[in-house]
Amino acid sequence: MINIGDAAPDVFLELNGRTIKLSDLRGKNVVFYFYSKDMTSG
Image (cartoon, rainbow, N blue to C red; front, side):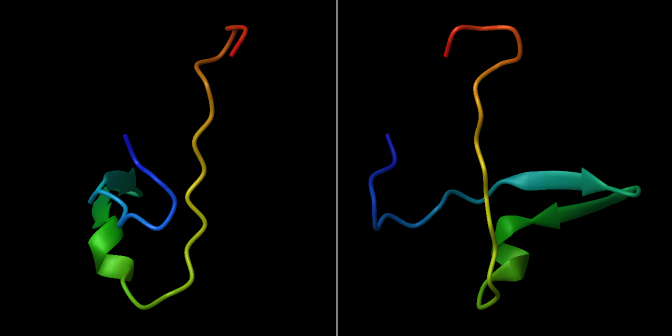
Protein backbone atom coordinates (compact mmCIF):
# COMPACT_ATOMS: atom_id res chain seq x y z
CA MET A 1 0.00 0.00 0.00
CA ILE A 2 1.22 3.49 -0.83
CA ASN A 3 0.76 6.14 1.83
CA ILE A 4 0.86 9.92 1.56
CA GLY A 5 4.48 11.02 1.45
CA ASP A 6 5.80 7.67 0.16
CA ALA A 7 7.92 7.61 -2.96
CA ALA A 8 5.97 6.42 -5.98
CA PRO A 9 6.97 3.05 -7.42
CA ASP A 10 8.80 3.16 -10.73
CA VAL A 11 6.11 2.53 -13.33
CA PHE A 12 6.45 2.29 -17.09
CA LEU A 13 4.40 3.90 -19.87
CA GLU A 14 4.48 3.03 -23.57
CA LEU A 15 4.10 6.24 -25.58
CA ASN A 16 4.56 6.49 -29.35
CA GLY A 17 6.71 3.33 -29.42
CA ARG A 18 8.91 4.63 -26.60
CA THR A 19 9.05 3.44 -22.99
CA ILE A 20 9.04 6.16 -20.35
CA LYS A 21 9.76 5.37 -16.70
CA LEU A 22 8.41 7.52 -13.91
CA SER A 23 11.95 7.79 -12.54
CA ASP A 24 13.00 9.42 -15.86
CA LEU A 25 10.80 12.36 -14.85
CA ARG A 26 12.38 12.85 -11.41
CA GLY A 27 12.70 16.55 -10.58
CA LYS A 28 9.82 17.51 -12.87
CA ASN A 29 6.20 18.17 -11.95
CA VAL A 30 4.14 15.06 -12.76
CA VAL A 31 0.46 14.28 -12.26
CA PHE A 32 -0.05 10.54 -11.84
CA TYR A 33 -3.70 9.55 -11.74
CA PHE A 34 -5.19 6.16 -10.82
CA TYR A 35 -8.80 5.25 -11.50
CA SER A 36 -10.86 2.13 -10.96
CA LYS A 37 -11.43 -0.39 -13.70
CA ASP A 38 -14.05 0.68 -16.25
CA MET A 39 -17.62 -0.41 -15.63
CA THR A 40 -17.11 -1.15 -11.91
CA SER A 41 -18.78 0.41 -8.89
CA GLY A 42 -15.41 1.58 -7.50
